Image (tube, rainbow, N blue to C red; front, side, top):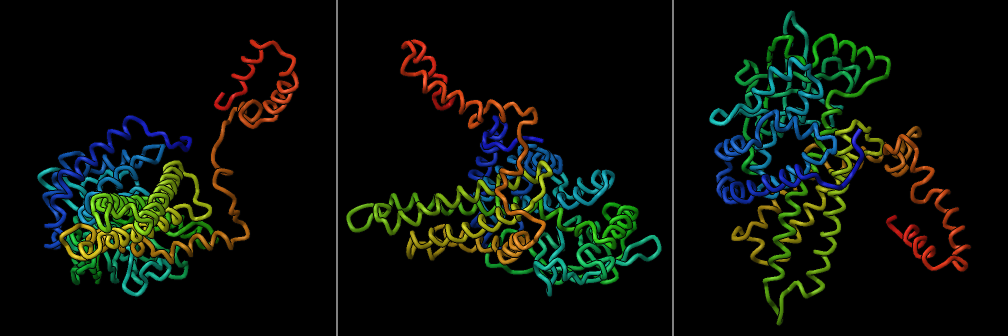
Length: 456
């Protein structure tokens, strides 16, 4: 297990440099066009593939980083460029995460390439969980999957599906045993043009307009048995555990991975709006000076600076936990999404306020960030759902709300316990040194002072 650290490696810095350059030079200049046209940015996705940012191996490599930092670092930069275009570029990674969590190695090898394609032949993927009547309530899924001979048959409706209806591969969450609630669900691979799956309508959205979002309908949608993720033996084993009161929902493992991912996306929008507001406030003069000199402008920006960094630290911690298999015990993944999404909304709103009337028209990009930011308090679980997840951990008598550092891995050798900073051995040595200090020769006193100084 990798230790949790905030120290970025040279590879991290190079990833950030490449991603930021792509966001600044390719994504941002194209953002107004695709936002206004509400079109899928196929050429930008192809450019991303040519830059190495759009392939299953790329995302698998980011997810495999034991520090947990590669993925949030990349996502923050891409979404700093444009949230709508960014979402189109990374949506297949959400479906890939579900495939990786629930599928077999053979299914991963079979379907992952079909989710991304390659430069010149771009493909898309979708993750279909939400439904019209349930929204974020995974326990209220109505889509059913029933076994029929050598096939599974899906019936139901899905909504708010990114790339829905145009994806080459759709991962669908469905109920196989209604009596088991969330534990009686499974995930299925549904390729494009499968009979019985249809796009009901494309949804027109407040923001993220460069990403395609749709409502889907499954009616007698028949797929081969080998497109059940994990296979039938694994499903039956999981259902048996559920009947004994064990196990967890099919989608929950995916959400543990994706909530920190969504938090990082929100941070990109928050940072874009915050940076623009600061630059505008430095340049804009009123009442005899730059408006940032006024506390009414600088104080809200100061609060945002602190809150964005705090949300980023929560996101990095949750990403590290997900990468290292450290269980979320007090909703750490939900904490990251909750704080990052809400600070994104506040940052975008403050950017509009800072720019005044100019912030309300599309001459400046801040109104777009305002529209884009709101999504993060809604999708992949609303802010209310995140608070519910966190709150349930607090009400569980078997759960402890102790600080997370109490549970982080430490020095297995135990050397720091005896000799490290704050140890009893060092405290006793310090007491002895203080008693001898008035009697010791100056060279010995100087050496002792160096040894006892902070940082030694």
